Amino acid sequence: GISAEKYVSREELGRATWLLLHTLAAQYPDRPSKQQKKDVTTLVDLMTRVYPCGECAEGFQAIVRDNAPSTGSGAQLRLWMCEAHNAVNQSLGKPEFNCNFVDARWGGVECEGETACSLFGGPRKR
Ligand code: FAD
Image 1 (cartoon, protein in one colour):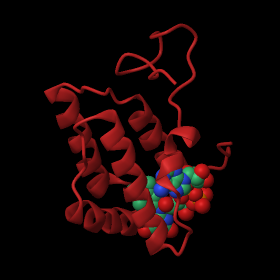
Image 2 (cartoon, helix red, strand yellow; image 1 turned 90 degrees about the vertical axis):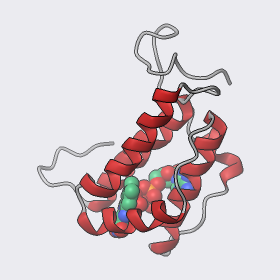
Image 3 (cartoon, rainbow, N blue to C red; image 1 turned 60 degrees about the vertical axis):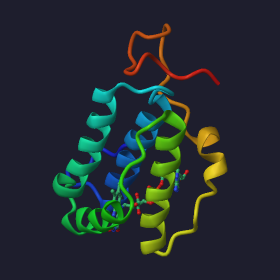
């Protein structure tokens, strides 16, 4: 869980951020609007500049520069996010995650009711 310490470690910050990014990707629509594509590209771009660990932001910038976000569909974005996360894993000497299992690991936000608390029209059907 999230600790109640005043200061946050890089690890905890990273886990919280990946949770956000993979959950967003889990709910990203199969047929995104132009605006939704633009928004995700902007979000990723901002992460390379305002992520509150400068060294991490710099590393992520290099990763995104070589491989721009694939925002054309939910499946594309989920794979892109998994590969971007794997590029960070590699730079830290962590094991590679098998992206065939990304949908089994990240399923979107739990909600009471279909669309009450979710963006992009709710968790996609599983
Ligand atoms: P995490 O890497 O945080 O992953 C959380 C969970 O996601 C894992 O337990 C696993 O279930 C799942 N997972 C793992 N890989 C994947 C994948 N490829 N796709 C989908 N799910 C996956 N830390 C640094 O020390 N230096 C850095 O330069 C740095 N750069 C970062 C850049 C970004 C943009 C982000 C978001 C984080 C960065 N971090 C960095 C933090 C680092 O990535 C980890 O979050 C942190 O080290 C904690 O690692 P963890 O082993 O708990 O799992």
